[in-house]
Image (cartoon, rainbow, N blue to C red; front, top):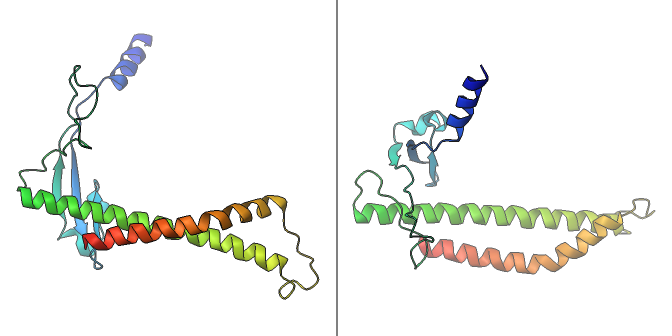
Length: 168
């Protein structure tokens, strides 16, 4: 019994080649989505979903210790797509990544602005005339940090949005 458990443990750590079906679909706003589970695609978009194949990861030779110069290694071919289709797919993926980054940056900025408003409201005589709501020192420290970070965050958001617009 112990030998069987040991064998199972060894098998769980052995390298196994994997292959997964990847599905691509576009929603009504034109946003491209990718998933490996077709059941996560809303029913209205399933008929228009495209099945892509992801090849098993390639093994780097012992002599090659780093990716080739010039950035990331080329992505594996997805089932015989032409160069134009691969370029369009890469542009769509980059557009989706940038759109996601923009949304994350907007959420981050909104959360910081909300914290700043809440601290300002607690400190305001108009909203809190009796000054009965105290501001915790940790909140004040965070307030100062966020006030210093917001201009840079907003500048990065503008840069990301302009990169996204250049792709469209």
